[in-house]
Length: 330
Ligand code: AVJ
Image (tube, rainbow, N blue to C red; front, side, top):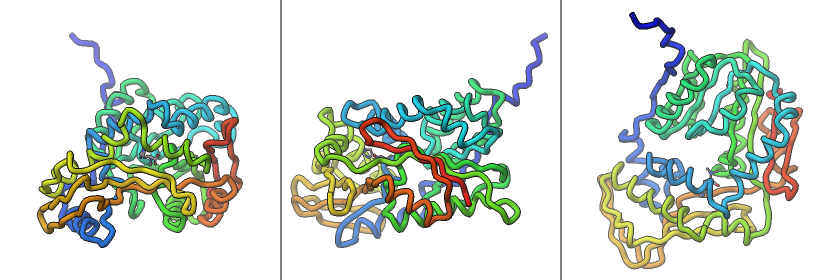
């Protein structure tokens, strides 16, 4: 007779509420592509291959954010854990392969781990594997788009919610949008009319333009592949006929706006047809695919305060390239 084990505890629960083939998605994409300055939301960079290419970006010598943030966490883990406390409901926004949160499990001992990602299949596999490694932690994977409303299912514990938003993904929002987004997180920390928990967030800081430019236009061309892969994702989502060889990757730091802009630029005239529209792009015309805002330490703390967070603790690396903040919902 087989030994009976509680197989339940090795199984992570998963809820998918994001459907990538909706009419709404197609309408949003069409509108962006037809705008005078064509644009797409950066969330469409993350199909299954896009998520893998992003993981490869994080290994690049030029892409300092991931390793700088990891070093800050490694060097200051006891202080960070002290500030956060144990037993939180750890809600991981844009969890990807869940590796960053997993490194905090031992110190933070979350009572529930809730990884959220728009890249549903990628997340389902990742959380499945993680649950095998940490059967004692309750896990609930959520395949959803959290860039709009923050609607969490009932099964997500209310008490001591700690939103974990590493990697400087907050940089994808412009500052007013970032405040709005952070306010929604603050709102979700409300328990019976009072504030509990908080936010643990990674923020990329303003630095020399040459370093920023190189981080988003690496020598190997992985970021270029990541950006170009958006077009094959659009081909799938929209039934479009983007020909990838007609486009080139562009990325640069705009000092005035304090943001990286990422674009796809037509190498030659290209007519693109998709379900719901068509457009001719002339040579040199661009599709704006991502912004990545960079902050000063003080500037970002002000955003947190505007959003209803306070008692902010910060940790940085020696070069002051990146910052990790823990802020309480107040
Ligand atoms: C995942 C939004 C943090 O802005 O640095 C990396 C995405 N784009 N290289 C960033 C990205 C190009 C990344 N974030």
